[in-house]
Amino acid sequence: EVQLVESGGGLGQPGGSLRLSCAASGFTFSDYNMNWVRQAPGTGLEWVSYISGSDNTIYYADSVKGRFTISRDNSKDSLFLQMNSLRDDDTAMYYCVSSLICSGGGCRTHWGQGTLVTVSS
Amino acid sequence: EIVMTQSPATLSVSPGERATLSCRASQSVTSSLAWYQQKPGQAPRLLIYGASTRATGIPGRFSGSGSGTEFTLTISSLQSEDFAVYYCQQYNHWPRTFGQGTKVEIK
Image 1 (cartoon, rainbow over the protein chains, first blue to last red):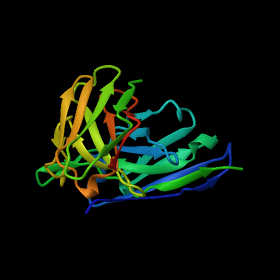
Image 2 (cartoon, chains in turn blue, orange; image 1 turned 60 degrees about the vertical axis):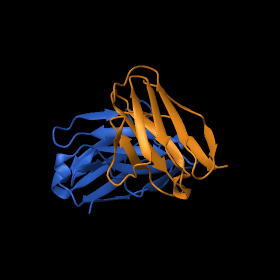
Image 3 (cartoon, rainbow over the protein chains, first blue to last red; image 1 turned 180 degrees about the vertical axis):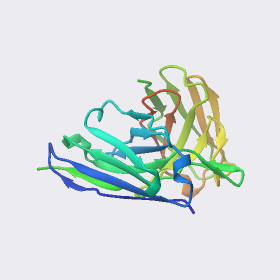
Image 4 (tube, rainbow over the protein chains, first blue to last red; image 1 turned 135 degrees about the vertical axis):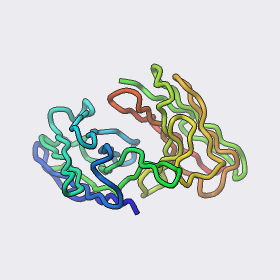
């Protein structure tokens, strides 16, 4: 069974840093591209960042470019998001999301349960 | 950046009725369009990818259509568990972008 479990959220200071982690299991992690998607309280979904499975192709939303860094450790089946220069509008639930994983004739993406980041002084 | 516009913002439907949700892209995204369902307190769930292909485990009452800039999600006969917020997302261009969502509520 595919599982994605995020951790590392909590209270961050404006201008401060947090590091989110996502532990993956149940699939060959290195074969799949991964994303971070966030959702501010009471609002819609915002894609944050993407990293390819093995060649480290990376993209960011303009709202986080230069402040956030996505990375992965395929030897530990883990995805990370280093968040620096935090701002109030970074407050959100952060989800770790897989690309399409296909098995048994069907495909789906997988989402973690999310980790809540609150930026406040 | 591709702007995704969903309509209506809220759709009031009676159980058993048909629901039609629209999503428009500011420029062509070919068929690289996904639909997600999100219930309160839960992570989103993929319903449709490639504009019209149902994801694993998604009931046949959900169908997607469209290409280019105009897309539709149809729920043929609404069940109680279908009342939720629905988002479209394009994955043809960077950055990936979501629509603002359509809330399907009980009439």
